Length: 84
Ligand code: SF4
Image (cartoon, rainbow, N blue to C red; front, side, top):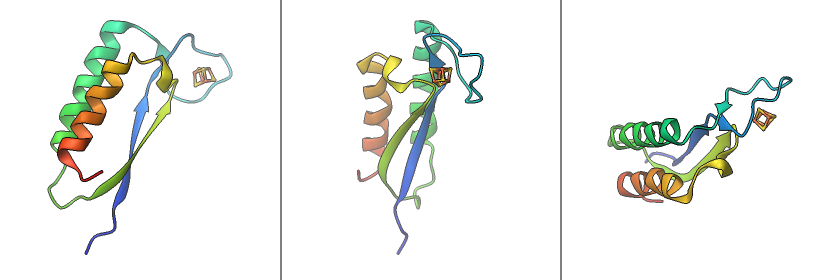
């Protein structure tokens, strides 16, 4: 029996890049965020069948800068792939 893992999704966008910050992030651009969310969703769908995940975490960057449909795209991919 495998122990469920947590899935961490890094959101690498912020309104601006603060000069003191060491977290990986870039200024938000809608088209880049759409492409990023699509790649994350594809990546989740490709995870091995034996991997079990019960929680999704978002960090960044500034996760709340993403429009809800993009957050939903990634969460829907996770719900399709795992038993959240
Ligand atoms: S993660 Fe926070 S501190 Fe770092 S650049 Fe974004 S808003 Fe600034």
